[in-house]
Each structure stands twice: as C-alpha cells, then as structure tokens.
Image (cartoon, rainbow, N blue to C red; front, top):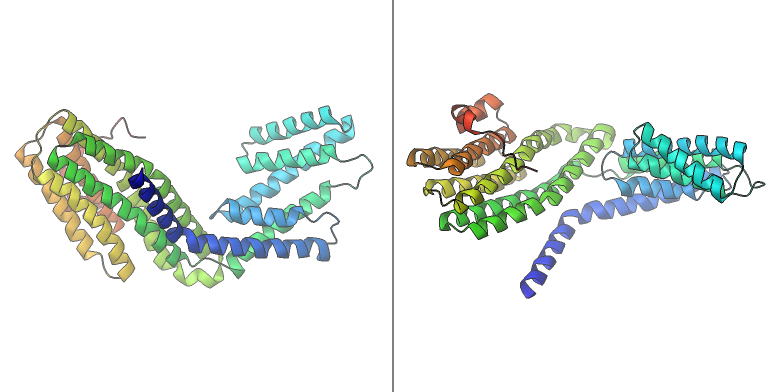
Length: 376
C-alpha cells in the first residue's frame, strides 16, 4: 500500500502544481463576479430577488474553464426556456405538486427536442421548479430570474475576459509540460518492456496511457480557455501569434497521443505472440518518447525545435532498421505507427505535412498504417 499511497501523493502534487494558478484565478474571478453581479442586480436594477445573479456568475466561471461565452448563452437560454414553459402552463393549469412535475418534465423535454446541452436542461428545469412552487399571490419571478441570468452571465464574462484574464501562454506551458512528460515516461516504459520482452510490463504501461486520457482532456480544456482569452480579451491580443503555435502543435499531438496508445497496444500483442524484436524497435519507441520531452523544452526556451526534430528522425530511422531486420504482423504495425507518430510530432514542431511525412518516411509505408480496430 505504501508505494500506491506515495504515487497518489505525487499525482495530487502534480495536479496542484499544474492547475493551482488556474484554480486560484478562477476562484478570485468567481468571487469578484459574484459580488459585482449582486451589486448590479440589487442596487442598480433594484431586483428584489438578486440571489440568482451571483450564483449564475460564479457558476459560469466555475463550470467551464473555456467557452464561457457559450456557457453564458446556455445559461440564459435554459432560463428563458424554463420561464416560457413554466409561466405559460402555470397560468393555464395553476400551481401545485402535480403541476410542477408536469411543467418541469415539459421544460426539460423541450430542451432535449431543441438539442440543448446539459446546462440548458438544468436551467430550464430549475427555473420551471422555481416558478411552479411559488405562491399564487407572490411577486412574478419570471422577469427577475431572466434578468439575473443575464446579469450573472454578463458579469462573469467581463470579469473573466477583461478584469482578471488568464495569462494564456503561461497556463498552457504549465498544463502541456506534465502531460507530455507523462506520455514520454510511459513510452520509455513500453520501450523497456519491449526490449525485455515483458508483456506484463507493456500492458501496465498501456493501462497508464489510457488512464492519462483524463490529463490530456484537461490540457485540451486549458488550451480552449487560452484561445478564448486571446480572442476576446484586449489585454491578451498580443499573445495570439504565440498561442497559435501551441494550437497547431496541440492538434497534431492529439493524434500522436492516440496513435501512441495504439502502438503500445500492438507492442503488447507483439510480445504475447512472441514475435521477433529487433533492438532497433524499442530504441525507436524510446527515441520518440524523448522527442516529446524535447519538443516542450524547445517551446519553453523559445528556440526552434531542431533538437526534438533530430530525435524524432532517429526514431523514424530506427523503425526502418527494425523493418529491415524482420518483423512479424504486430511488429510491422508498431513500426508503421511509429512512423506516423513521428510525422505528427514533426508537424507539431512546425513542419508542413509533406515535409513531415517525407522526413518520417510515412509515405513509403502508408499501406501498413491502418488504424487499430481496438482504438478507443
């Protein structure tokens, strides 16, 4: 249990180190947005029920690191849908437990029909509940609820994009580095398992790569947030060109991650089938993992990724040598996928597809690079 506990502590520390700045800034933004939304709704708009405005502001910021414009639109759309359904039906059939259940069901059903997201359905349903449970002689809450949603969402966007915008390049740096290192470490582990012909170790590495999907998706969210900030915040417009470089890299690294998992899956199949393992094959897998680490370091240093490209070319050359030495069915697929991931990394480094494929030798081996039907 001690190694597992230490691993959990390390992983928790890495998550804290990676997302602390983002979480702290989101917390400050949510607090500021809630306070401003309350002030606008209660003092400026004289809303007698301003509680939903700060709740909407905090929820908009906390619910999604990126896409806050869309989140605000979903919030407002769900409230308006709930108001329309709830107000109309309650005037027709009155209020009560049965009527409230019917109103909520119809509001959520309508949200589903118009293909609303989960946020739209939640807001439509909660607004319908609110309208269905008020006393008949209570003040009309339809208009205040809609105004609160508009105030809360609008204030959240202003705070997140104008008053406390993220530093897009810094947060992408902090998020991308550990993810690249994680994948690189598992590729090194898979290469060692391949060299030692240890199918169990290769399967364990594959399991960790599949579990790392959570980290990769979080990195994707961070990149989305950074893109939103550089697009909409005037204070971050000067970062657009720099972030565009990361966005281009992210697209190709996503494909590299997927194909890396396929490659390691085939490594497991290769070892279980006891196919031949020329020394160049594990060397190529390890060289590709090293090129992932080097690419991030080149980005951090602001230098051309020549070192990462050179290491990626070595991986492609190793794949060619492994082919020449003789491979079985799964081994041939591993070598082909190694060429593909090298090509994606070279495109992430800034090469065109034609240059990257030619450098990696992908075009020469394209027939063997069919996707693995077991890919998830």
